[in-house]
Length: 98
Image: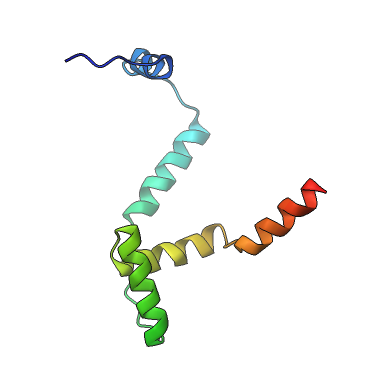
């Protein structure tokens, strides 16, 4: 059975065999990303309340992830992007709509 591609998918398929030159700057960024992904993880020990750990485990089940992976994701997001409280988003949205 042949799958019908939409225009977006056709463009991807058309360009999939083409070689695209990248700048040295972009190449260095890509190499840095690859190198950072290869860096070894460090084990740490933390103390956490039973109730917090149980809530994290519940959320991890809903997400379909091991709870350790979920915790690692929290930490990574915090150090790279920072967390934004949902209530802050609502306050900003309300202010913009006024």
